[in-house]
Structure formats: C-alpha cells, structure tokens
Length: 307
Length: 249
Image (cartoon, rainbow over all chains, first blue to last red; front, side):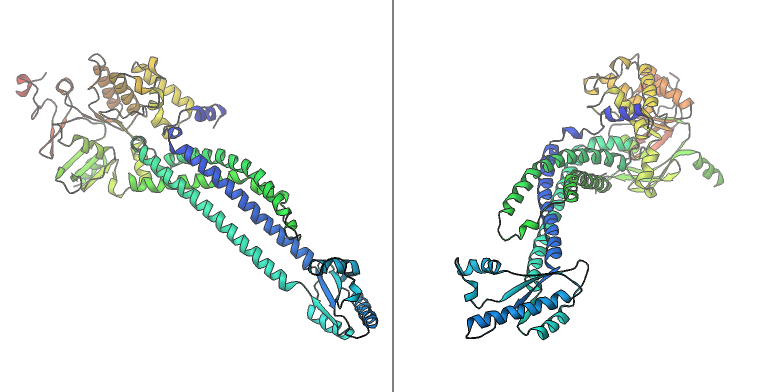
C-alpha cells in the first residue's frame, strides 16, 4: 500500500460508525481498570518471584551449625568446653571443600538475637545459650547435609545442623499460595475483560445490523466487518491500557514503600527488576491483543448465527 | 437433456421448484422455476405482496429457499459457504426500493463501498466514483452526507453504488420510482448500456411507462407462482385499453 493509499485508508470514514457507540466509553473505562488491577497484581507476582529467588540464593546457599552448651555445674568450665567444641567444629568446617566461609556468631550478635525474648542487659556468658556458626556454601556447589551431620557428630556430639529447610519450605509454600492467588486474579481480570468486550461487541452488532446487512449485500466477508471491530476495540484497549498502566505506577511504588516498612527483612528481597518493569509497561499491548482477538472472533461467530 | 444443460450453463440464475415461506406461514412463493440467460434484461412485475422482494432477495443471495434449488453463477446457494457467497455477491449490483444508503457517509463513500470491499486502491476508487457521480449529476453533492440529499439524489446514489463495480447481474427494485421525469430515462439508458456490455438485468417495477417504453421480457408474479411474458405482452397488468389489446406503445 503506497503512502497516499495508507493516508486515505486512515482518513476515510469507517462504514460502521463504531465511534458513536455508547458502549465505547464504558469499554475504555473497563479496560483501564482491568489493566490497572492487572499491572498491580502482576507487579505482586513478579516481586514474589524475585523474593523467592533471593531466598534461594541467600538462604539455600547457607546453613547454621548449632553447638549446644556443655551441661556442667561449673559455669566457667562449661563455657570453656562449649567454646572448645565450637573451635573444633570451625576447624572441621573450614576443611570442607564446598564451604566458602565459616563465621561464628559473636556474643553481641547472640545477645541481639535473644533480645526480643529476654530483653536488654543480658550477660550471654551466664546463660546456657547454644553457640551458632553461620556457614556459607560455595556458589554452584552442593553439599550432602547427611554426610556433614554425621562427620560433625564425630567432631562434636553437641553440634547439629539447621539448613533452614523447615521454615523456608513454609515460607515458599506461603509465597506460592500468594502467587497462585495473584495468577487467579490475573486470569479473572482477563476473563471479565474478554466478557465485557464480547457483550459490548454483540450489542454493537445488533445496533449496526442494518449496515452490516448492506455491507454483506455488497460482498463484504465477515472478516471485513470483524476487522473494523478489531481495529476499533484495539484502539480503545490501547488508550484504556495506557491510562491503566500510568495510574498503576505510583500505586506500585506506594505499595512497595509500605511493604518495606514491614520488619524482618522478608519483604526486602521483593523488588522489581528492569525486565519486570518492561513487562508491566507493555501491558497495554497485551490488552490490545486480547481486545482485538476477542472482538474479531465475537464478530465472526455472531455473524454466522445472526445473518 | 444436453440442450437443457448447455442452457443452464449459460444461465446466470436458475431456479427449480423453489418455495419460500417465513416461519410456519404459507408459502409466499411456490414452485418457482426460471432460468435467466447471461446478458438478458427482464422486468419483474406483480402486485404489492406478490413476492417480488423475496424473489429478488434470493437472487442477491440474502435469502435461501425453503425448498427447491437456486443456482447463481452456476453455484447451488444451499451448498455454498459464507465466504464464497460473499465473493458471488460482489458480482451482483442491487438497487433497493428504500435505497439502503449509509446515512452517516457521503454520497462518494457510499458509491465507493463495493470497490473498497473488493480491496481496490484508493486512487482508482476516486477516479471511478468521481466519474460515475458526474454522470448521474451528483458531482456537486459528492461529499454531502446522504442524509441531506433529496429522494431523487439518494436514488441516483443508490444506482451509482449498484453499478460502480460493473456487475454481472444487476437487480433493481423500483429504480426510477423517486427520480424526476427527465432523469428516469437517463438511468434506464444506463441500465440498457450496462446490459449491452453483458450485464444481466432484472428490474422490479410497477411503472407501466417503463414496461411499455422498453421491449424486454417480463417475469410476472401472481398467485405465488411465476410466469414469463415476451416483450409487449402485457397480460396481467393494467396499462390501458390500447396496450391490453396487445398493440405496441
């Protein structure tokens, strides 16, 4: 098609006066709201994904070795024995090839950990508190926890391993549940939007039946009419989609800032990458595709039954 | 038999024992059998309610028969899919009694419709539409919305739209009913010229003047059936004593 023809095609008045349909405004508002909800929910799904990735990277790549305090009436001897056990365990752990770093938690760090339960001013040496060792595993290495636990038991019968699996599994299950919920919302949004487009298109077809019959008489195929509907609905979806996305951006930032205020650092790993933002920003195009597809096939199917 | 087959191959429209009924009502048309040879010109007559519009709508493929066989351009319309029917319709020009123009469009866009539906490029569309609108003396109102045109102007627009694609079959329902006396012969001349170029023409009319002025055979609907009369045979219509005696106008 030459430039002139393309201009003529765009500027010429459409046979079906779809711009005058009263349902157009409704559809545009509906699509704006849908894209707004979709963008926020999608941001939630992408954040949960990034959070899960962070947990996997930072937690599954580490483990904690716990050394129970030696039980003795002589408190100083018990503390010294416990530290002696810790030293042996550290030496063993440092000899394991897959382990990158071994860091025993200091008294101050231990005090900080039990502070929420026992309050300020605790003397850690006076309490039978287990010693903790943070172990970082080399990236890409897999460690057999069963073998490690057996070897540790030989080094010190007081040592045990916590690889965070129990509570991490619970968190992952919770995050997966949230993700499924969000995906269901996304599915429902698509379903409701497609439904609205379907009924609005059907209403419009009934309204313009007279014109459609004339076009048919002149040899217009159903596809010719369906294309006009697809173009119009696609345009409505583009404008509605852009409005929805623009409104969703400050809302996402607001929710993110509220989430960061939650203590515990669990949500802190939930941030949107550049790819995630691109996915959100191209949502209007996704809306256009769904709108055009739904309108096109609604027209094709309805006309087959109607005329 | 062979002769019949070759006749049928040459025919634009063939109907065999066709009946049309709406819902559970009685048949509007019964046992209609006809064959319209390529390049023929027929008037279609009959009283109001005789079924002229139903017969025409079957010819322009807007309706399928309740029974019987209808072949248009050699295709049995009962066994032709929607897209193929659309392609057949592109070879047919129709002038409706109530014009059926798209009121939100200009005369130009209305006349351009059949060409655009066929996918013709806009330069060619502009050239052909402008030329034809000049010929039917609508060039001054070319870009006026059809809702602002007079009855005669609307009718000329409808006729221009029907003939713009140089159809193989032209069906017209009272095409000169609303035009001035001086433009009616001009439009009929256009139909006759198209016919000479090979277009098969069927004109439904009540106009005695038209039937007497032009020597074409007549399809006459009466009592739900159809009879074909030769030119100048005015049986069944009231056009004055002189003509009823069979004399030439």
